[in-house]
Image (cartoon, rainbow, N blue to C red; front, side, top):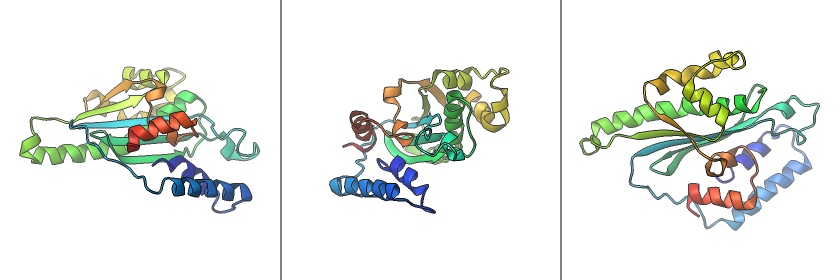
Length: 216
C-alpha cells in the first residue's frame, strides 16, 4: 500500500524502460529491504464504519514527462476504502482522458472510486442482514472529500454551464447519494489518506499517512 503510487509510476514504462526507471525500481527495492520486518497492522475500531478516501492530482506529470508526450497532460487519481478503519481496497491510476481542471480530476476520482465502493457496500449490507447479532448495528458509510468545488458539486448536485459536460460521465452516483446510501463529508487535505496514491509526499506527510493506514 505504501509503495502503490511508486509502483504504478514505474510500471508505466515496462514497454520501453530507461536508466531513470531502473533507478526508480532500485529505490523501491531499497525501501522494501529497509522495511522488510514491517507490514500492515490491522486494528479494527470496533465500530461498523465503511469509509472511502479519494483524491486527484491535476496534470501531475507536467514537467516530468516530455511535453511532446500526451501523457504529460494526464492526471492521476487514487483512493482507499476502509472497513472499521482497516484498509481493504486501494488503487492508484492515471485517468485515460485529459482533464481540464482540478475540479474535474477530483470529481472523476470520486465517481470512479464509488464504482468500487457502492457494490462492496451492497454486499456488506446483505451480509449484515443475515447476521442476527448485527441487525441493530447498521453500517455507517462515509465518503471523504477535501476539494471544496468537488464537495459542493457532489452534495448540492446542481449543474451549471461549466459543469454540465460532466453529466454523462461522472454524475451517475447522484441517485445513490440522494437515497441515503452514504454521506459525503468535507475534510482538510492533511487528513486525506488517499493523497499518497496520487503524488510523491514529503517525508513527514508520508509517515503520517502510513501510520493511519498501516499502523507503523
